[in-house]
Structures are given as C-alpha cells and as structure tokens.
Image (cartoon, rainbow, N blue to C red; front, top):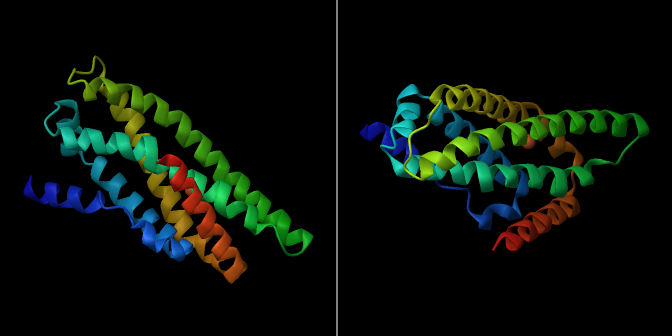
Length: 186
Ligand SMILES: [Fe+2]
C-alpha cells in the first residue's frame, strides 16, 4: 500500500504552468503523466479500493483527471495546436488533415466513454456502493487502455512530427493560447 500511495502522489503533480513557454515539452510531460495515471488506475488493487471507497483521494483525483485534465489535453491539441499545422504543400496539408481527423475521432470516443465512467464515479464520490461494479470495470479499463495507447502514439509519432513543422512564432502562439485556455478555467 505504501508503494501505491507514493506512486499516486507522483502522478498527481501536473506539469507547472510556468513550463508552458515550451509548449511541446509541456505536452510531452503531460502525455507521460497520462500514461502513469492510466497504469495506476488499471491495477486491480486500485480498482477494488475505488469500489470499496477505501481511498477517497483516488476517487477524487480520477474524477479531476477525467473532468478537467483530459478536456485540457483535448483543448490544447484541437484549439491551440492543430490550427497551426496547416501550412506547406497541398499534399502535406492533406496528410496532416488525415492525422488530425484520426486524433479527433479518438478524442470523441474518449469523451463519450468518460461520461459513463463519471456516472459511476459520482456514486462512489457520495460514498455509495455501485450496483454494478463490473460495468465500471469494463468501461474504465477500455477508457484507460485507449488513453494510454493514445498518449504513447502522440509521444512517439505525433509530437516529433509536429516539432519539425512549428517555428518559434508558432510555438509562442501555441503557448499564448494554452495560457488563455487555463485562464478561462479560473
Ligand atoms: Fe490527444
């Protein structure tokens, strides 16, 4: 249990907003953290503790991740990054358009599944037992495995590609948009 508590403390620490000056490096760090979060909540002992209401912090953080941090991941990409990528030849624009459509499709699927998971989490947040814990287990496992694969793919394939396309002015625009998104949340 002590190891799990240490692991949990580590994954709760978001990348500081001060690092938004380097928006791609910020995104890389947040994708790595997303993978750690998924690995943690995919552990059967963590899932059992959630259902038994043993560690309230674990329920509250999963709720925060799905309701605030995951939407920020999606906004950072769809609103702050993707519009900057349409430059170059028609063939290059076509290719990036296809990649973006694929990412957006995954984001949409994740949002849909998140709603089902959040319904069960709201019951656990009230300290009540789930009538059908298997439903949460299946939905949560599908969601977390998908989010982990998505973050791995973005880290290994998408972000390196993007790095080649953006110049200093683009990165400054992207950082400014990401700051605005966060200011609107406050
Ligand atoms: Fe994404």
